[in-house]
Image (cartoon, rainbow over all chains, first blue to last red; front, side):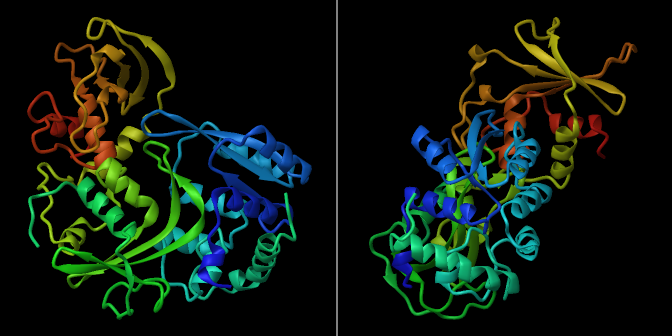
Length: 161
Length: 254
């Protein structure tokens, strides 16, 4: 896979994210905008539960994010934790989001502590992921085949939503 | 290359110019002493800049993130910049903060502006009243105040505003919301008209004759929370001399 193959349009990225969620590789996902009616129907057709989050900014604006999951319970818990609150990158929020999104705990903690750091993964592998892998992460290495499989299926047209 | 002084926002525009340049060309990775790009050695580019080059390596990850200041959605990933003997790593999502919000998030700089200044060969505009060591404590104290009593009716100090009340270290404090017609000039760092910010009055209700009255103007709150500054060159943050020092005392911070 070359670097060009990993470049996706916004719509394609949304589909890729949805497929990862349908397959349970990501227990829950967030798309940081409101979906249109057709997109909502597609997610529901795939067996995902969908909800929205309203979050505030420092300037007092409200923004709407869409969350979806196979688990209604997880969706509701995540919504309870974040709906109505401010957008925040504090450690507690990042930790909770990371775990709900299915990121390895070691990567979440490393990201909180160090942000983006050299991790030993190739450009292509890292660009399949929605989290930043921690250095030489074993859990990410175990997750990558599943990400790769879904990505290839999606890019080859084998999986459509 | 030395040019006229530029603002932090200008540094953000320069970053965008570099990474969007059509004049980029692949460059041979060379090892830097302090910061390594995440994916050496074959993904770097360099762009002519003045009499030299600025090199970059952009490592995007999937997903988006919303700016906590304004909500703008951006990509996520790491941007590595190098040139003139310095290198800087910046989360790509923070370039927006540099461009649009003066480079500070809750009082914390999102990049090393001194290095960026060297990298681009420019002087950035000097900041007056730069970050005070107490500022983090002040911001935390302000965010710790829980506005639990809604819609306090304005009194003689602000007859066209509403407020919420709370308590801080035994003092009653009020957060006042001004009306929109009190619009004042935009912030010189980010352009935000600061009537969008709230005017905060912190008021003691001590019955003594020497009742303490603390006023934090909207522009002061804006500078502190969004840019990590207590004042900015040519832009008075406080309506009375020593206002910041009074606020620190009021909040119990030496």
